[in-house]
Length: 171
Image 1 (cartoon, rainbow, N blue to C red):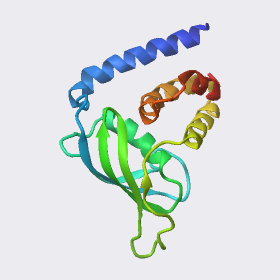
Image 2 (image 1 turned 30 degrees about the vertical axis):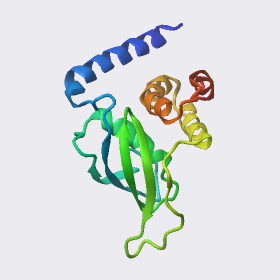
Image 3 (image 1 turned 120 degrees about the vertical axis):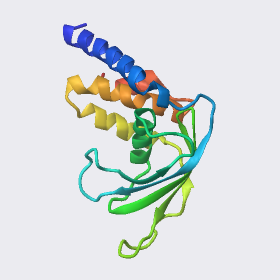
Image 4 (image 1 turned 90 degrees about the vertical axis):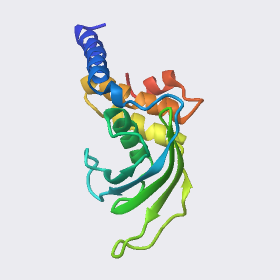
């Protein structure tokens, strides 16, 4: 264990404490179901923080916060397959699990609908894609990114194998 890994784990703990102290009051209530919708755009170039871009968000009484933003961003990235399109999710958010349908919207000028609405659930290829994205990061950035996506990955699949995912991420 290197001093760098010790510092990274300490930093993650301190960051989590700061998040709870600052944003804890906005966290979703355990076992409460929030119903609503999200509309987002996926640009055709780049995979930066602006991609996907949330255009409209209505999840009932759930306020916007990092507790919602991180799992939502991971969920939207995993369900956005075609660039240059608008999508809409209608469903629920409960205990960091998303359930509902994702539909491609068809505003004038963006082309025809290319797929039917589908159930929103992460598949094995989504886990492999996320692990590949983490693997290409610099070594120091892998563990923090892993921690950011871990909760939503665990929530998305009851058979999620954390040890296997750690190996796949190159940690």
